[in-house]
Image (cartoon, rainbow, N blue to C red):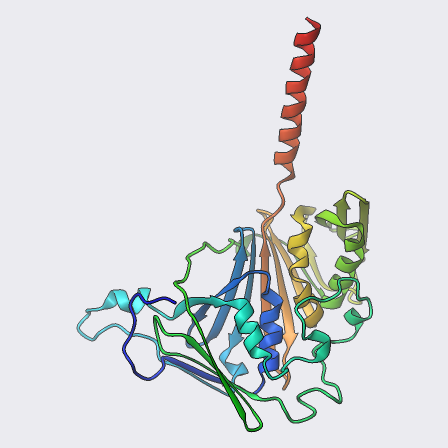
Length: 341
């Protein structure tokens, strides 16, 4: 647990209450591909971010409107101008274990049985057509057992406290906090977007599920102004397959591309967004001129609200592999020439 810059006992600088631990779990479970999650606390909400090898990034933002109460007291600069470093560098920002956080949120079975475990079948064709977050006769919401989740954080060096209340049972969990890392975010050029597509998330999930049957290693994404418009192609050791989407509001609600845009990505990275594809109602697919892919999922929250889960992917550099192969081939060719001489 971090001890640097510990604050003395006092009121928490952050307190929030949610009427449903289930919806918190479902959103955070979408970015469970990393062991730790970095949390940033602001007056607008909580930002949970994870990354993998600087090529994959996932972000869940919990707006304060999702909580029944939200109180945040951020450090401010002293009136005499002193302690300015504390006001900027020591804002609430820390890391916790993501697996421990997810296990805590489902202590009272806050997740339905169909989504309780972290591992889900990839080829569940029926599951993609049934909204996993939709209430049923035995859901916590229908039975009146949504439970209350209280979050609090006292400051640097303090644990991230989670209090779960259901019926007459109260459980308190204090998760150790760690010094935050400072990884650079994957840059996405919003002023140089080459392609923008809005579609139902389940269409994308079904396409990725179909392509995964070939155990691919690479996913090629192409968008062109004319047919086939939007294409997903998977390439692997067992062969290749592709899925094409025609232009039309039945499939592509928004389709904007001025010229051909094509990039390749590691297939396993795209699959990391599978839980968000299952949960969301819509997805915005965007690509910039550097090839960075942005997938923004809109998730409908119980009670009529919405939340967003963002993924960014760095493109797969095929040219490097081609150069390496050609270099190896040229070296082998030189050896053959020397042998003949």
